[in-house]
Amino acid sequence: MRLTAALLLLTMPLAMAQDVLAPAKIPNLPALGDTERQDLSPLMERRLGEEIMRDIRRNNDFLDDAPILEYLNNFGNALVAARPGARGEANFDYYFFAVRDPQLNAFALPGGFIAVHSALLLAAQTESELASVLGHEIGHVAQRHIARSIGQQKQDALIPLAAMILAVLASRAGGDAAIGVFSAGQGLAIQRQLNFGRDAEREADRIGFQIMGAAGYDTSGMVAFFQRMQIATRNYSDRVPAYLQSHPLTTERIADIQARIREQPYRQRLDSLDFHLVRARARVLQDLSSQGLAETQTFFELQLQQPGRQQVAAAQYGLAMVALKRENYALAQQWLDKSHATMRKLPPPGTLGVAPAPEGEIIYVSTALEIKLAQPDNAALQQHALADAEAAHLTYPLSRGIAHQYGEAMIAAGQLERAAAYLRDQVQLYRDDPNAYDLLAQAYAKQGKQALQHIALAESYVLQGGVLSALDQLTYARKAPDATFYDQAVIDARERELQARRREEMGDKFKKDLLSPESAPALVR
Image 1 (cartoon, helix red, strand yellow):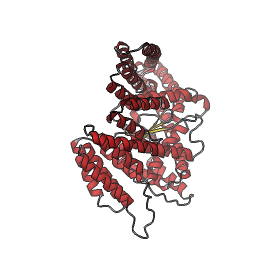
Image 2 (cartoon, helix red, strand yellow; image 1 turned 90 degrees about the horizontal axis):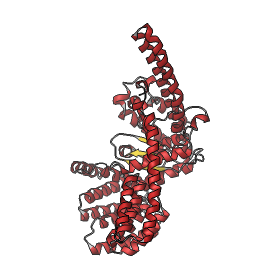
Image 3 (cartoon, one colour; image 1 turned 120 degrees about the vertical axis):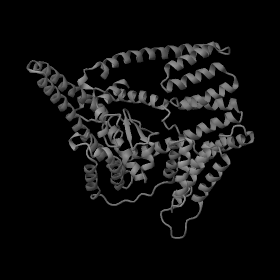
Image 4 (cartoon, helix red, strand yellow; image 1 turned 180 degrees about the horizontal axis):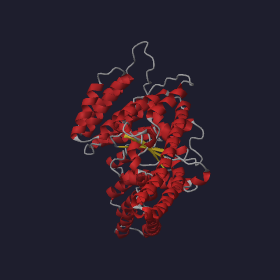
């Protein structure tokens, strides 16, 4: 992770020259030749991505929201599946997620992790536009641009080094001459990085265009979104000369994609209701302050006046979410029922392209459960929530969000032994799910099983990158009065593993700190 941070800092002065489809935080600079990609193997690339994701999950701006995560992963992995070879030579498993951020942006992390800013999700007017963004980022991952950039960075590091040596020699002739030589060498290295950045973006555009076309999306959505980006970034991109931009000018990219569209037959793609419901949900979750909720409510009230069932249903759903966050549960249920009824209403005769009634059903079911589970003091309601959650889990067995709500409903209804048994199965099936471990810890806490509670919390902290916190939890578990001989053996074994990991991390930190910009000459910052 610190190696990546070092690379980011090396390119930080160029961040404002980047367009919004490329991550300002991750350099995407390709280089020619397979030997350069050996600097970051697929296994190490995935491990690096997982380390970064653990930090991201701990951040408050990570949108850990089940409906949004499930939609993005279903949508993104459908794009990956539509194009053979999209997983790249490393055959990465992709994970798509959202972060709260007011800037139009999306970025790819090492190893197949792709983030979408909440503002970008709201700015995309169609699923085809969203497909163009995710397809572009999938292209970066498939071509392993991050791994290639590391090899190129190592090559370009020789240029400033040679310039520094020449500057020392030139200093004998005077300070100005030394500065001139030094600046020339640094400028050449930066220009090479810029050129590779432009090549990477063009390559990602081409791959993204192919992916969204193979998945059946309207490829003109890429042009539409590029044009929206051009307007959004005009404030700063127009002040940066073309030769200093690390990515092609948006006008160049639009022209390239338009030329490709002319060679393709027109294909219309209707948006799913899930797309509109998820956008409404993201709009609410983007700003939960009182002022933010008030502005969001006004937005949805205006959207109610728009034509189209999906737009009206999404606005009604958004108002349900606003009421839920304000803890007005009765009003939240009313708006949710209205949204559901809007989509179930038969369309006028002769209407074409209307979404089928079952669409968006899982989001409605999940939100109805969310409203019930937000009222833990209502015992009768919790019994209803448990019955509804059990039915939903049977209907949608692969939904992680519904699975969590089922466990939460059992705990709220007082079915603690049943909840613990169910959640133990869940953490065995999904070992990388910190939310399942948190729920298991809750079940144990309500049962008074202190040792098991702290052991479960330790595993949750490990998955979120908190090794020290996990070791603290294991210490609490060891001292718990109900810790059995078997529990002590488990604690001992896990402590040894985590302490070994901690020593390894400290060793890596020492090595990476030596390579950090703080310890490097000023010319490479």
